[in-house]
Image (cartoon, rainbow, N blue to C red):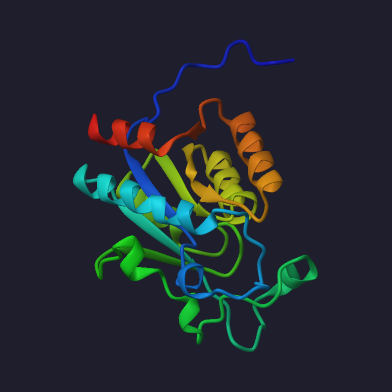
Length: 206
């Protein structure tokens, strides 16, 4: 039965942070015909669109937190990750693993969380940082919609954060997977799916 008693929520409840998930150099320098992780059409352009949200967050004094997936060269920390469709990726000694500094306007004093698993919460100090910043709402961008964005959203939801995903600033392993993940996130929190324009307008209104 659909929830007829769900409360009406603002796009930004309380204090917000913009979370930039796994927008790394490989997106812009890897032109391989076969990639270690599948990307839907238009992936690169959707990652570039995040820059506008980053600039708007900075202008509104909203913290920007970059998330970087990284793995040890001896592969010891991959665990079950290589049992699925994904091949070896994001090795810490590979320049492609670096944050996309120029494209995202990454600054030396920006917050950076490195993770070994899909969720930004798993085995990191992400929540300690969020608590320190007194964040209530997570504005999620980046990739993959169906993997790292989705699992970070779910963990944020389970930790009682208000979660919003900028649907034109995320991209999945395929269009079908992208759309299914967005639908799943909207199921957890009504109003979770927002556009970049809506998110920027909400940031500017603070």
